[in-house]
Length: 231
Image 1 (cartoon, one colour):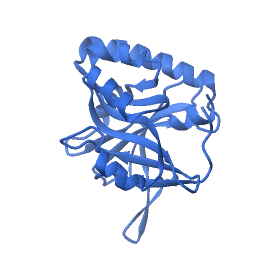
Image 2: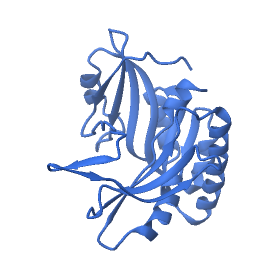
Image 3: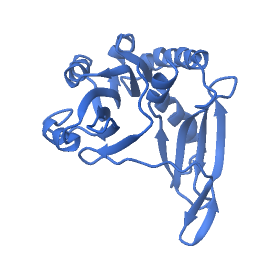
Image 4: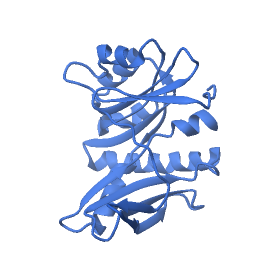
């Protein structure tokens, strides 16, 4: 896949939000700076390049965040191959006990909206959010995140407003719930780079750390950056 231009712009579609990530462990609460509390970290690869973390903003916070952390700078093709292999094992195991599996899907390269909707409908997937990429008149890439509405998976009228003349390259990732009876065949589709099923496993592990009045928020992001830069 051709690497993207360094300069990008971001847009939102429907009611989605774009989040800017602050890598600092220090959080600001009012006028007070508080330190993030790490409840647990665990390697998902033996070499430690991919791990999951369980944190909260401070000791008093009721919000617990679980995230898969990838060492982007040092991750290589073999690391990702190992992660995908482990993910396939987890997928097969979950498919035996779960009827629906929450997943984060990254495509090998952006696919058209028609192809995306055909895949979704064929596999009876409930899409929660989708990610698109477009190229505007200034040769800048736009990353667009959106959610379905009641009428369609990707609302075309809203998309045209957001694109504002930019050339849509396609859908590069999405999050959704995939029926277990279809998930392994879906993951084998040539358009699919990774169907990451980590959310269920991390939720079950992290629930053991959660108090009754605390809320768990599990984040498993797509790996489009890796496909674009490394593959």
